[in-house]
Length: 460
Image 1 (cartoon, helix red, strand yellow):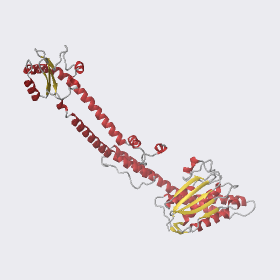
Image 2 (image 1 turned 90 degrees about the horizontal axis):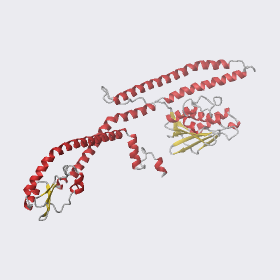
Image 3 (image 1 turned 45 degrees about the vertical axis):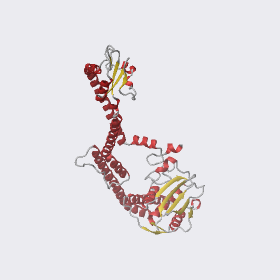
């Protein structure tokens, strides 16, 4: 029964009904409000009706006791002594009462086929102060002069309508519950809009604000929606300002970097200057690549990322990238390329996919164990999706860091030191490229090493 514990009641319809009902009550504000209102209504009704019945009943009993005693005495006198069955029958036909006569001469019951009610039994009457007075004299029983006992009672037929009244009351209560739920659902409908709007804002979509009900005179939920809309506008402006600042800084830094690179190339090639010149050129190249990556990440992170799609032979593109990197990393750092036969051309942005492959291979070369096998690159097609998988044979990444590797500027200390890696934009750019093409990026530990798979839809 493990699946019962692991099922998700919100999305899994195979969960038991009681589990779904319990979670619905636990997570639905509407249902809990309706239950609270109904419990409060029932409690107030029971307490009020019970209290009023107690107050009225006590006062009415004290006032009606002498009247009832006098009326029972008159009915007993009308029946006569010895009791007349004809007169008793006339009284039973005229009034909603039952009569029972027990004596030496007359044994008669107005309703012989009906069982005697429990409240007419001796045990109940001994406990009921209403049916007897302080001396023990029973109000509904009389004894005639000739020794006959006459017992009066209410006709049970007058109580037959009670079940129908109870069912009617229950039906009305259920109807009121349904109407209350519909009304509460209507009142809390803005919560759904607020939840969907907050989810859109979290995904970076600020185009559609949260609708505000009765904008001219909003209630508390309307005010909350308006406040969240204001917060979303502020966040949007902050993000746009940050993006504009990064783009401006990147553009402004290109010119001095170009001049610094040119001046470095003009340095004399003397033995004492060559090491400093090479180190300076290396640092300037790193800064230039960083600025290029920043510009590319901001272009791809926008909602309208422009792609220049064209039919591209991914196998040939992969060989070009591998040859370019092999020229820089020789010997043990060679890359093993595995391409599925008859891989078709796909309509993609050639320059962005090249950037994707280069970053994946750079990352694997940087963290591969020199004593282990070289990094591997696999290209395969399945169900209209091409998988570009790059795997190294290094130490891998702790599992708790895997979900964050494709975030901007993220470098786990245990696997990404500043001396061996960049600033944390490589995998972030890979994720942006795959998402811009409608694909996804998956990162996993290959044991040993790290495997990164970019899945791109292959449109011919």
